Structure formats: structure tokens, C-alpha cells
Length: 150
Image 1 (cartoon, rainbow, N blue to C red):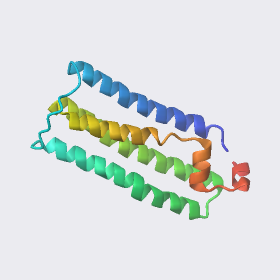
Image 2: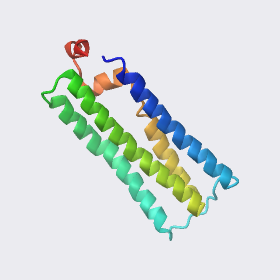
Image 3: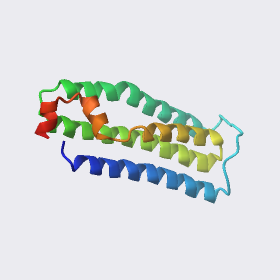
Image 4: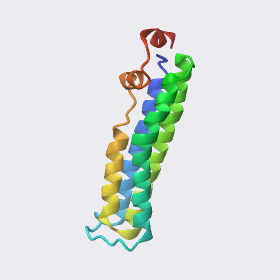
């Protein structure tokens, strides 16, 4: 496989994870500790955060596999499949990171732990995306000939 794809995608993924964790740390520092566990569902930010979290989960478990299936069954070369995978992967990361960062902003504004719990759920999901050679090969179901072509 193209050796430049993996370090690039790993660096992008690692930078996104690091950015989310550092943003969380800065917000906790600015709030002088973790938010309270009291829940006030009267805030519209709470509903938006829940909607974005559900949307991110739906994208990751319903839409993403369908897009990968289209890439697998397409008539493109192995290089084309990997290029299409990179695009779909970056969209997946952006949607999940956007929802997680919104949850952090809600945590800062509302000082409610529910936003923090949503953030941690999205962070764990995001970390599970870490792109590895084996994961890409199994997701795209690349044959040994296609791997050699890269």
C-alpha cells in the first residue's frame, strides 16, 4: 500500500484527538473544575448537542458503512478506492469531531456534566477510528493483487 497514506492519516487523526482533549482540558481549567452533575433540560443547547451526537452516531453506524460498500463495489482501481476511503474517512472524522466540540462548548456555557458525558462518548468513538493498514484493507476488502498495485 502507499506508504504515505498511513502516516498522513494517522497524523490527522492524532491531531484531531489531541485537539479535542486539549480543548477539554482548557475548558475544565477555565471553569475551575469539572461541571456539576445537575441536569437542566430547559436549555436549547442540550437538545442541539443531543441531536448532533445522535446524528454523528447515525452517520458512523448507518451512512458510513453504506458509503464504504459503494467504494468496495465500484470499478475503480485500488488507488481510487483508497482515495475515496480517505475522503469518506475525513468526513466521518469531521462530523464526529464537530459534534464533540459542540458538546464541549455546551459544557462551558451551561456548566452541565451531560455535555461532558456526550463528549466522552464521542471521543471514545473517535479514537476507535484510528486508521491502520489492516483496518483499511479489511474495510475495503482489498485483494493481494490490489495491495500490490498500491
